[in-house]
Length: 320
Ligand code: G4P
Figure 1 (cartoon, rainbow, N blue to C red):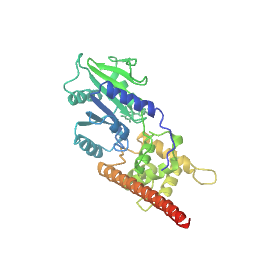
Figure 2 (figure 1 turned 90 degrees about the horizontal axis):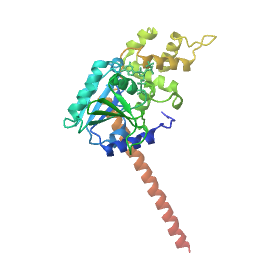
Figure 3 (figure 1 turned 30 degrees about the vertical axis):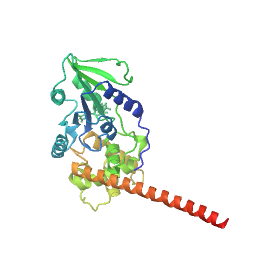
């Protein structure tokens, strides 16, 4: 799916993360969307913070399918130097679990002399501001920038010896996995002008039909629905149910698409997760294979062009 966006703040946020790594960083918190825990993981962040202890927070778990959230937590908890927890960012007591998890990841830090320095990152709209507001309560103070650190970083003192460094929500320049593009767009992480909402809604319908057909049936009163029902017929039925009719009896498909996305984002379809760890691994592999094929094809074309040129040169010198 073509996504046309300039990921705002990307370069300055990337620089801020690099500066933070240089200045001292003990734990990286990556806030993920529990409905798309693989697609919302930023490959750029992974590359910039390689080797640092990592806490994956699967936020909006109240909107995600609990057993699949469990699979994702197991998946991340099995990775070295990594802990994973599920959260609803507005819930105060569980949010404090994040502080405990960070302390466990860096047990030698966390007092006044050796403060625990934690960076928090996440894609736009994943709930970072909500979580920070929940964590901050009355006890924390936001302070200005540290010398030498890019202005956009904000330091928050969560408790004595625990510093949280906040950076703006960040996406990455090219989403190599097609399904991830659809999932990120459906979740609201990507600005609406950067993608085709109708296309994203149809993809979402294809996933829901496969994984949660009963939710579509219940929400939109669809009597019959199975994998063979065309996606656009489902979208049309959604439009009829959600008041996206035009005079004369047709349906405004774009309005129907918007209504479906609003319902998904707000949780009106129930608790839904769009991807499993196994699917994500397969998509990642397929994307890497496709990249490798593309590189091979480019290399073959380059060699063919080179041979053609040297053939031309030889025949020209033979003619002379
Ligand atoms: P950001 O800083 O990462 O960009 O995200 P932000 O906190 O602004 O949250 C984006 C939206 O997600 C907000 O909804 C927020 O309420 C919602 N949200 C955050 N965490 C959770 C969560 O754990 N569960 C659920 N269900 N929602 C969450 P909004 O509609 O944009 O604003 P509003 O509802 O706060 O007015």
